[in-house]
Amino acid sequence: MEDNITTIIIGNGFDINLGLPTSYTHFIQSPQFADLIGRGNRLAEYLKKKHELQNWVDIENELKRYSIEEADNNYKDDFSSLCFQLINYINNIDYNLINTSSIGYGLIESFSENPNKFVVLDFNYTQSIKHIFQRKFILSEEVNKQIIKVHGEASNNNIIFGVEDDAPIKPEHVFLRKAFPRYYKAWNFNSIFSKSNQIIFFGHSLGQTDHTYFKRLIQDSCSDGNHYGIHNTYLKNQINKSFHFFFYGDKGYHDLLQQLDELTGQHLTNFRQFNDVKFISVEEQEAIRMR
Image 1 (tube, rainbow, N blue to C red):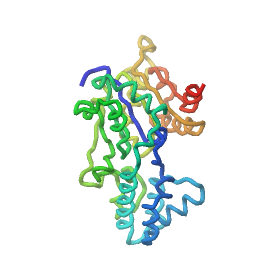
Image 2: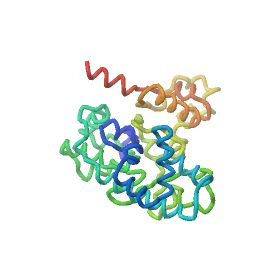
Image 3: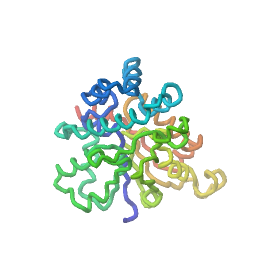
Image 4: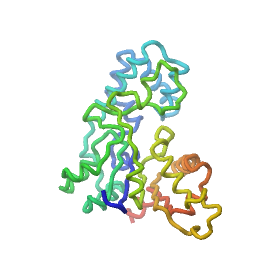
């Protein structure tokens, strides 16, 4: 892998920006989820009630609450059925729905002619990235190597779905841990990040369940090599990396900064001082395109 590459990190917000129905709300309203309800899956019933209360649900957080407050002896079977139907739902997504005018599509398209200059860390279970490259007629083995499916792929029936290592769950519910499946791969992206002069986040919330992937990258970027740069005046203007964070709406920006505040160890100022940091509003970019 060459040095000075761009690493593009995408989460579910990327697929939603493409126009794909990949939110948990879409899943809960699907025939696949209705099948779980029809079969008396108590976990599905719990998630549906939570969704009805606020028209939104964070399934990963609810899995933790359900473990502590609600779970019965069928939790493991109900969770397995939920995963099965989530895979089934994703595998039935119509990729013809992809909006080629979307900001996310344009971002990936802009890198498509230089496959050796980027790596995609794809946290989604879908095949959206591959479909974009197929439309550009450049999906080769070389490009495939540049796409890392961090949490697996629904088409291979091997999704990594669950909670982080330190999530407060009952010991017998270890099957909820993302590291539980036998096919789990513990990615270490430090070598990729060390070769990356630019890091782009699109549709990824930097949520707590994924902090382990980014904590060292973010904290190392807060420093000039001398304990957060407090004493080294000579290197104070040194730029470590370029970070671009795409966000959607005021809440999206707030939530993103909240996660960065935690990841930097409350050194947001140092992070912004020692890096070229840009926060890009997807809404504003879409408005500009509409003019």
